[in-house]
Structures are given as C-alpha cells and as structure tokens.
Length: 433
Image (cartoon, helix red, strand yellow):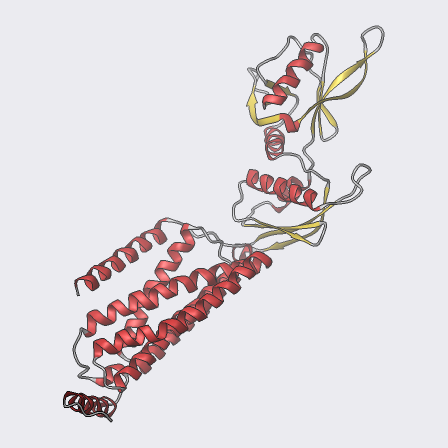
C-alpha cells in the first residue's frame, strides 16, 4: 500500500507540473487555425542549370528555411511537392506580400574588380571571386551623418579574398553588386585585413534591413519562381478552432457520461484518469513543441478514444474475474494483466503506422500522426498506471460488498463466490471435480 501512495503522489505532482507548463508556455498553431500564406515555388532551369537535381532541391529548401527564420516567423512548414516544387506554409504572417518578395529574391552579392585601360581608367567590371557565400553575417548600421549602411563580416576564406582584393586595387574603385545591380563603387583607401567592410549608399532603413536579412539567409542555389499563392484568413482559422473545440468537448463529455452510466465507480475513475491524461498530453505538446493543426486536433481526439478503449478492456476483464469468484484485489490485478497484452499490441500497431505516416506523409498527415502517436503512448501510462493505482487506493484489498459499483448484479457475485467457496472446501479435503 505504501508504494501505491507514493505512486499516487507522483501522479499528483506530474499533473501539477503539467498544469504549470500549460499556463506558462503557449502552444504554436498551424496555418489552418491562425491564418497565413501558402506559397508554391518552382525551381527554374537556366543557361547554366539544365536539369534540376534532388541535391539542388535540398539546397533550395535549406535556403528557404533560413529566409523564413530571418522573417521571424515560426511554425513554418516547407515540403517538396513533385520534382521541382516546394510548398511553404507560413502561419500568422501579417504581410503576405513581404513573404512573397522575400522568398523569391536571389540575394546575390558580388564584389567586382575594375577593368583598366592603358591609362588606368576604369572601362568595366569583372567578378573577383568574392561573393555573399564568403560572409559570416551582415548587419544594419549608420554613419556619423545618420545615413544607413550595411556592415559585412567575412569568414576566414572571405577575409583572405577581401585582403588580396583591397591590396591589389588600392587607390582604385571596386564595385559591389546586389542581385546584378551596382549599389556602391567605393575607392579602396588601404589594404583591409580585418575581414570587415561597409556598404554605403542611398538606403532607407527598410531597404537596408531587407538586404541584410537576405544576405544572412543566403542566396538561393537555383532561381525559383512563385507558381501559386493562397491566403488563409484569421477569421476562417478562428472559426475552425472554435468548431474543433466544440466538437472535442461534446465528444469528451459523451464518452465520460457513457463510462459513468455503464461502469459506475470505475467509470468515474477512468474519467479522472482521462482528465489527467489530457493535461499531461497538452503539456507534452507545448514542451516539444507540437504545431497544432486541425489534423493534429483530430489525432488527439482519436487518441482519447483509444485511451477510453483501454479502460473498457481493463474493466471488462475485471468484471469477468469478479464473476469467476475472485476477490476484488485479485480481480483488479488479474483484469489489468489480462488486458495489457491486447492494449499493448493494438497501441504499438497504431504507433508503427503513425511513424510510417510521419516520415512518408505530407505536412497535414505529419501533424495527425505525431499527435496520435504521442497520445497513444501517454494513454498507455494513463490506463495502466493512473487507473490501476486509483482502483487499488479506492477499493482496497477486500471483498466487493456492493457489486452495483462495478455495474454488476448481486447474483453475479454471490453465485460466483459460493462456487469458489465450494471448490476451496473440496480442495481442503482432497476432493477434485
């Protein structure tokens, strides 16, 4: 009994911690619940790129993820659709136009060296080999006159390139191109070996910030064109969330009423365990964190049904043991032991399917699979540990005096008890049937 009390308080503490997590941490919501933009980009072939390979698509996806992070938007989903397309879902974005422009731009930074005639006059520019790929980071700054500028910090390779470039063309201009357009042509005053440079020009703050974000996110490995764009309004998302909550509450209340009416006191215990399960699962969703979508909510509600199903198996097995004449304590233990194999096999089958769906499915299917898998695993803890512990604490180790508490008739228990007593008496005198 001491171990049961310790387990009970452990469950109470876990529930309290889960409630605190729910109160403190927000849960991220997906595009279909809070609104946002869905953009489809297609990689484009060029004179230098005849075929779009999977490596190019992987690089494009990574570059776009960096750009979305630079936008400061979380819970964004990017997945490949077909051979040359990527679908980007950006929830809760206030400026879809900004996302469209930001994702589609190339962000090519080039430092070009001058082409000189015999009189040392600049007649043109050629690439120097120093590009945006040689940057560590870029940031917005301002000069003493209050003009906006862009500070560049080169990596080790870029530092060497920049030092050689400024040494070779000291006293001459070099050109800085961004996306094929010259934005500055400063004259090199001295060799710069520190790996830092500044781009000055007639920038507004917004232009400077945008350029810095693009440079920090990195250039797209292949050109990409926006093929489709859909916007989900926040009103539609809020309506979907409200309907999902309503449907979930109706379903949970209906299940709880059924458990109480059919299983009586064990049904009440199962409902308490179900509430504890819901608190723990939401805390886990927030800790991971899980981006909650309509499909994710569906997976969670389905896992609630499976948690209740586990309790039903346990209670039915326990009732069978009581009908066979076992004591209450023995019947509870035997009921849990006999039901465990069925519960474990069915739940593990569901988890395996969820793993397959998560790795092979689309973003919507992934959300469903993840919430269902987590819910099923936690439901096993809820049914096996929480329900069993509470059953032992409430009913103790004695005989079942009130069969109606388990939804049984008095005759079911008395006949079984008399039969078991007769068997024990016969066994005492060595009489076997």
